[in-house]
Length: 314
Image 1 (cartoon, rainbow, N blue to C red):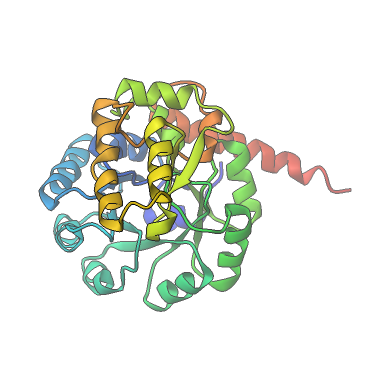
Image 2 (image 1 turned 135 degrees about the vertical axis):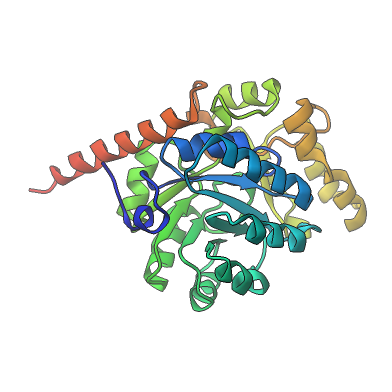
């Protein structure tokens, strides 16, 4: 069984994180992943603190294993969510879409392991200096907010730049991707899109069906003009947004166009106005299965691949 340093630090069986996807990664999904030996993470997104507190307590009622909360730093509720995570005593906080420096001391004082998502070497070095417990190096193949560098390029550079454990994310959906991440120097992986197919994932059936039927060229990136690029499925909404992005619409109108679009996809399966976040690995997701089985099967496949890799050297 693959057991790395991050397992020892967090007290988890498998070095697998479930991405903190906004409006998707709720307490039920997080508990299922944690119960299956990985680290389940509740996605705060743009949700208010009361919602996050409720989901933390829901997860606690379903598992006694460590859980995490992802704080989306662009959220208008980021301050309140940051305090809520500390008050509720979650074991891990991951962060995205910004710099978490202002919250680090509060979280560490509460005994929380802080594991920021980084998309550059500079940010990795800063988070290391500020006392992060580990780093998630996320390449642009991922869904949601994305950076410029690919996972294959980013992960080894982050591993070279810090002595902290590095979790690879972006474009990882099976044991092959996980094995590649370990070969690049990572000691764990984070998967988001793969868990959209979990039985415990409560996205709208239309959303799940689109993931299960996805093809290799199913995603696109929008939002670059505003400085916050996002990867999602290639839907009518995404194409219309891209057209508006470079068609003279003001920044304010463009922001308004995207507001609430993810929630419409997740909760209503709205094909006209919904934004269906997805990473490039969606085409590898073929069936719905329990979250615990996803964790186990990915790690077992990775272990077998790594064992075979040793036999390739004469």
